[in-house]
Image 1: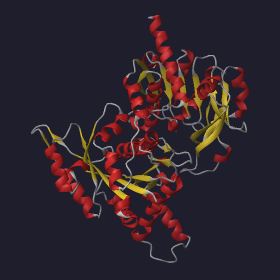
Image 2: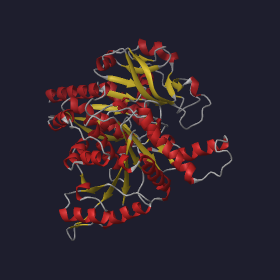
Image 3: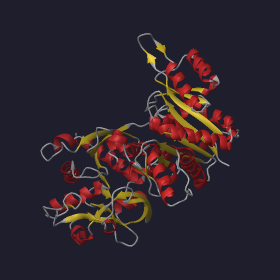
Image 4: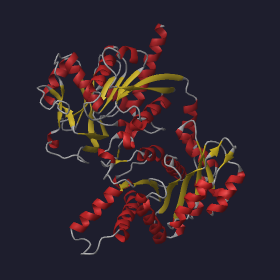
Length: 537
């Protein structure tokens, strides 16, 4: 039977519950346990798929095609395990499922209530993620902040889980803010006390308090929190800001977090093997080179909108001995007149995925600049489509080339709606999840070193095959296709040192200790480009 760890948050949001949960997952995996992670989000949207990135950051896509919260990206990057559709649950999805069951008569005419029907649905998801992954330990993060009205059914559900599986098989971790008042030079424990009291009032008694602080807490504060929150002093653990995100597991393990969790769950702590992780951190700290990458998008004011891309760029730098500095370029303000001023000093240009016409002409200008100046270019999803549009306009001479997403009545839609997407309504209906791709291009082969790959998708529009011969004849090669040859999955310009566009999202499969091949090669070429520039100066 699986063991269960629940991570809640108090006082304020944004304390790092996700990083705490992900770090614990990695530590337990280092002890030889199979771990599955899960996020329960209290918002009423069915999933984040139709939400603005400004609301919740990026949408992370799993192998089986679930559109999920960005914290699942942290979980996958830390524990290096593929998650699934049971790994993210929202209030909207819970009620959707329950109401559909009610309409289908599955409740046999009962009055449908929060308890037991809503809580049973939540519990079912918690249990399912363990069953589908055959995990030893399931780590579930409860989104929101303790005391929020919308979080209450989830809190009640995990209380019931603890009752059903037994407290020996369940551990509660509460992440909370311990503020420092600079005027009086004091740490304040009262917000934590109130937060824990609120949680206790709902039947949850935390086993571990993870205190979010900016500097080490005095022992007196630790003792005070332990006494008033009814935990042992060693179970009050500091979570401080670290220079590199992936140092978080090491920091938490210095306080014996995973050892304590194993003890609470009556698990053999086993010997922890941190060798691979520490070697990775050594590479990170030893980087000598620096490259500047322009990330050109329309949501750059919120960096979390491109979180997985930013992390994948960093991963590529870890293997290329390079610190990656991201130049966040707002494509709404980018045009042919200022593109040289904005991009002349960068070593690589990346255009990420996205939807809608806003900022498109700026993205096309950035793509053109990369192609004409032989700057390493990586286009992801919309970034590939932009590369196709730009090439059609400026090389093939099709001045009105466009995507039917932006100009449905256009005569030259070099990017067009996929045939199976006609008449499909919004909301979880795109081409989602992992699909196979035949590797054809030289740069793609150089990166992957295999002929068949599986990558995650999230799109409705594709390369229009009617134009394939024109592109191939003029220097843009089809670098990857679906196994049946029907869908173009990647393009390259062989004349350039590195110019690759892919319809899929490679950033979702990049790991800090195993950079995605495309990001590894992109950053490697950016380093070479930087070195060539320096040699000319």
